[in-house]
Image 1: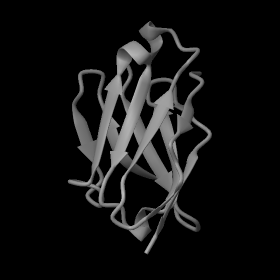
Image 2: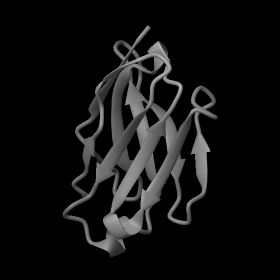
Image 3: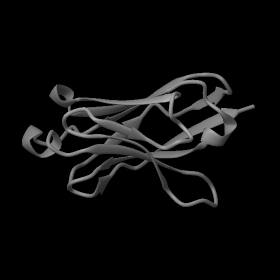
Image 4: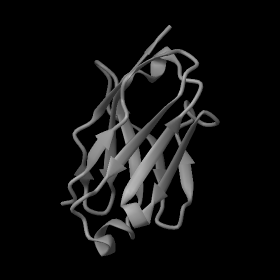
Length: 116
């Protein structure tokens, strides 16, 4: 297991931007770095869904609903993954979770609320 800590969630108006961070402060780089990292989100009453994923080499994929608005990135030297969210919509409101794919580890989640 990798201990993951998300931060950056808050309330924002539609059209605004946020950057979420996911740190693995206790992970050794040989465990953190090779694994893809992903961001998921879960809105009230809905299933958790994949938002974006990045490979260890930096290849990315996105949910159709966030393409062109969200950008996932990682800094392996800091053992951190990021999710830059622009042009936020009320339907982006959810708890956002960081996921270390190879170990199956999850963070505790960070709340993002977008008001119209």
